[in-house]
Length: 278
Image 1 (cartoon, rainbow, N blue to C red):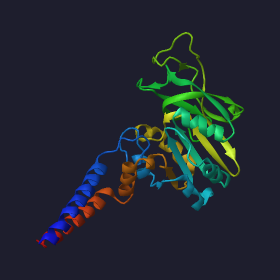
Image 2 (cartoon, one colour; image 1 turned 90 degrees about the vertical axis):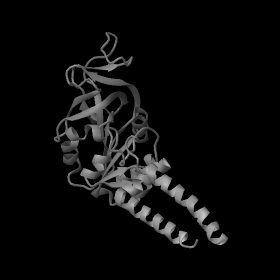
Image 3 (cartoon, rainbow, N blue to C red; image 1 turned 120 degrees about the horizontal axis):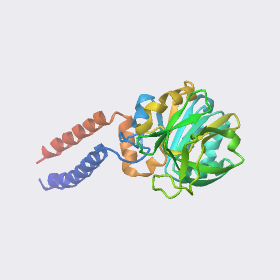
Image 4 (cartoon, one colour; image 1 turned 120 degrees about the vertical axis):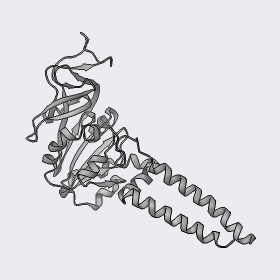
């Protein structure tokens, strides 16, 4: 009897821990650029609607035939395995990148382009609902795009690669007040570049929001046209640095609700088994 109780007590603790983790990971994610996040800043729809695959590390790119895939990279900051990303591009891969100014500036410098953040761009004519979204012209055959929280960069030697720019009615909001002030630059500004490296190329968009849930609809056709039928990979290496979010992603990839149901059923079976020892 004492032996049975000694086994049940630690088991109950383990069950409580597992159950707690399952409850936490089943709650909605709010982490930006996470494939498990169905909110405005997540990539849930991109993952679901394009049947994309998740990469937990850019090191995994070495296992893919680069010429046959398109990689979406959206990050808040920091570079993870720039060597692996450059190798993927040089082998014929297509990369579409966007995110925070810090990330994009670092990415450009990693590709040999000096860049400096100038400020966020607003457009008095082509702004959308005054929420930081603007319609952006491109030179691509795939049409125009809509960007959320776009910004412009001062580029050295890469302006000829610019494929997206704001309208002549846009300005750089230097003081961040959301209004045009006389001292602020007014006119067209580059909002994206396309850089060829080896046999592939990188499309870099200067915006915090481009393919996430909040703005995917107006950009879906541009994306499909650009990838030209290639399977899509989503970089989640930054997101996977959060242990709980990593667990969410693992569960999500395996049909989260069904997986949680099975885990709970397993736990209940263990409880019933050890309880029968009393």
